[in-house]
Image (cartoon, rainbow over all chains, first blue to last red; front, side, top):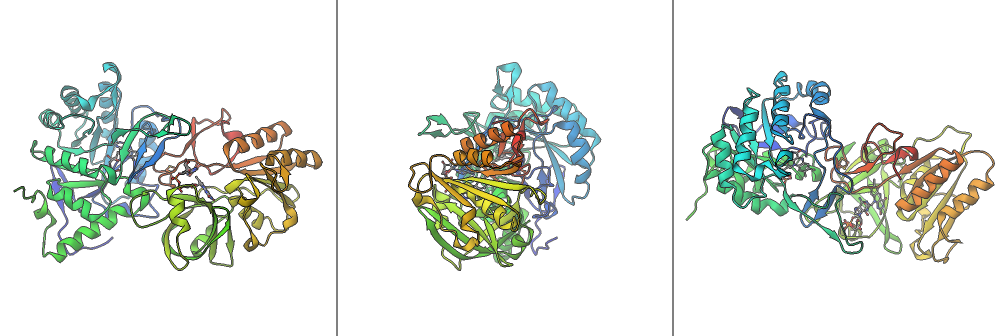
Length: 308
Length: 258
Ligand SMILES: Cc1cc2nc3c(=O)[nH]c(=O)nc-3n(C[C@H](O)[C@H](O)[C@H](O)COP(=O)(O)OP(=O)(O)OC[C@H]3O[C@@H](n4cnc5c(N)ncnc54)[C@H](O)[C@@H]3O)c2cc1C
Ligand SMILES: Cc1cc2nc3c(=O)[nH]c(=O)nc-3n(C[C@H](O)[C@H](O)[C@H](O)COP(=O)(O)O)c2cc1C
Ligand code: FES
């Protein structure tokens, strides 16, 4: 465990974090893949890979393609399903001296509710993060997260099935994030996190085929950071619940932008593929920034943005 | 497996667009086995973003490991400019290597292009055991000079597609001859372009020979976290997809859907 001069603790809603840096869902596995390279306990928390009611094999390959300062992925939410997750992965989470958040998704409201309910047996999991970027099969495959009413319905459905705090993770693939943030807050979410990946595609001009097996995929990495920051800024100015900033954060400087804009915490995703210790380096960098400027409490920076 | 900054001891051109890099890393050398790979961060910036996977092509002494690579894009282009004495972040060794068959059986190593890289390491570790090495290239200019590997040139049989060196045609032609010539069963090890490996796997199946393939896939993490490196599994497995970084890169040919 590292020790820091600055008071890096943050609170958001019912959660207390030792520092505001979390690993983003889908980029840190179930916490065990990186364990001999990077101690998750040094981060404020980890969000696990998304889990669904039933196992999913995922999309046909190729599943990833690199793009300028970023990458597209079309993993297709491959996962082992909630039953195997509880059996194989949850026992190992006990050793983790940090906040563990499960990320859940479904293709119907009932699936969301059922996964949330199954996780009630696991005290190792402090909170749920709900991925609402998934297609709603009952609504012709339109993502839940693109409609305020559907977003609120998912939120309520999960809340009805859990006593854990519920964080709703918003999709950026919308014209205006504000009505969705508001709808989710009104439905009772403890916090929101944003952004999930931005839909994109790449064409191979030799074969004239899409580079991804799934044709389109989700863009992540530094390329999306300014978009993510703008959306976090809009969300912070719309809701009263805490906001977690996600998208393209690779350095402490990047994390600071989000915190200053009003995010109570940040998640680091794609950066972990480049540097398994990225999150930990960011924590250290936040401490350095505060030390150099005589800031005793990192919390004082949150929302300190001066506009005009 | 470690993630560390290591010194580049040399980085020299050994054929057209092809480089051999020696990196100093005791921990990697100690753990490395043929078929393992490393994820190399080609620079400190974020564009290109991801690490690049390379097979370990061999070791030199107790603390150098080798990568043999071809410049095909931005990342390998940056790598080719790296001067000796610089430091690069390396993650590895990663993946599952070749299982070396017990002594007695002879081995046939079939490589295409840069696919020879992991097989060179295998050849190094097969020392004393009988094997032949069949290597296919587009043309003679692409054939790397491999003096540092200390391999007996007689074990090498080369095919070029344009006939500028060795057999005029495909390396799989050489394999067919080799299989016909050898009376006793031979263990096949292969790495190269997908169509080549697919033909080798087919031949192995026809002849009932054991065959291990080293696969490639686009990778983000190399550690089993992103699930990006999926390849389709054959019906002989209970899975839809295999992950090249953690199930492979070396797999029994029969486990892969060709
Ligand atoms: C386990 C493994 C071991 C490998 N070992 C070697 C090796 O020993 N020597 C060597 O020269 N190359 C090896 N490769 C391939 C090497 O990783 C790619 O050539 C390299 O990442 C290309 O990077 P780039 O930025 O130069 O090219 P990019 O600009 O990223 O791409 C240029 C071209 O290379 C192809 N490419 C990119 N990444 C990969 C990849 N991971 N696998 C296959 N093709 C790719 C792209 O489709 C494109 O056509 C290996 C790949 C894997 C997965
Ligand atoms: C390979 C990969 C898998 C992901 N899987 C999930 C997931 O299962 N659930 C989820 O809510 N977000 C998932 N995400 C989105 C990330 O958690 C994050 O929101 C996004 O990548 C933007 O952050 P980044 O730029 O720091 O990566 C995934 C992202 C990547 C790159
Ligand atoms: S490269 Fe990430 S799981 Fe294989």
